[in-house]
Length: 165
Image (cartoon, rainbow, N blue to C red):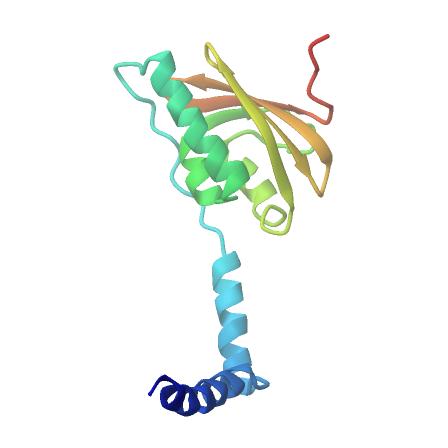
């Protein structure tokens, strides 16, 4: 009986697989390219709203971890930028304006195609650091200052994370 079912199922599986693997027609190609364009369209979220009463250092550290995961692991700029305040000060010399929208506009065109290798993160007081390798810029250390549960200031340097001696 098992052999009989295998004889019936193998041609059916082959037929359905071979037609699914055949060259796509124009309608399929058009649908796939529309999907890629849609997935690459990024939407800036509203800026982070300060939290009152002020969150504890532990709560801010948890928010930082969520930000770092969205920013570097899933590379979801829309989710990551929910933690950035409207008055965000960016000390990156290549970003000519401050504010969450200016930073988003700077990163949105390049972030989806940049390969990121997350290495580590650290949070102390009101500061969070992330260290990663970027296919666009090499090894990066970003430092973020947090206030009232939102990122309000950013510095970045292209350098290697210091090692303990």
